[in-house]
Amino acid sequence: MSPPVTGVIQDLERVLLTPAQISVRISEMAARLNAELAGKVVTVVALMDGALFFVADLLRQLEMPVRMHTLSASSYQGGTATTGEVKVNWPAGVDLRDQDVLLLDDILDTGLTLSVISERIRVQQPASLRTCVLLSKRRERLREVPLKDAGFEIDDEFVVGYGMDYQGRFRNLPCIGILNPGQPS
Image (cartoon, rainbow, N blue to C red; front, side, top):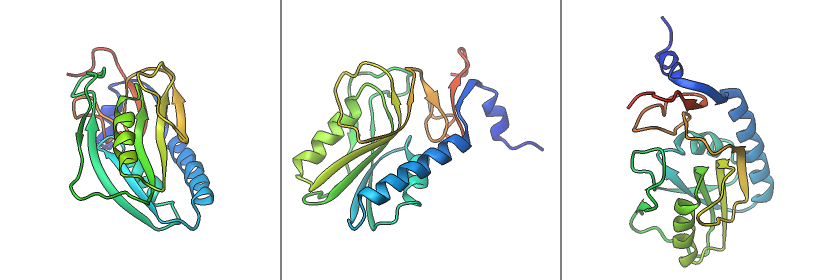
């Protein structure tokens, strides 16, 4: 019997990044973070749900002490294009003053979501703020975001897999891919 994800992969037009490519790149990113943040206690602010796999794989390779806060934010609300409005679910009681903050997200697209979150973090006056994403789309940004690390630069296409979804589906793919046009609603 084939694994359940096999049928889902058939819904892809093509695989953009294989599990092996993703794993190698995340290891490289972790090595750089370990070198540059050595000796610090890092407070991670992770945007969920799309960044779940990326955050889990990256954090397991970090060698410094880590505090973690998760929040949900989206400007897509179920479609394949941004609505232009960012909805944020900020957890109560998060104080980032004087902390070294590592903001993690799955993808930098228009810049709206990460700019709203970055502004909210900066208001709390952290000691430092570093933004790191797995994917950065080659496209004009609606808002610029200071980005220190991007795992991969990709074309401006809607991607799924490795935590990223379309209408709640495809998060469990071990790869990142492009949906077949006409695939499912």
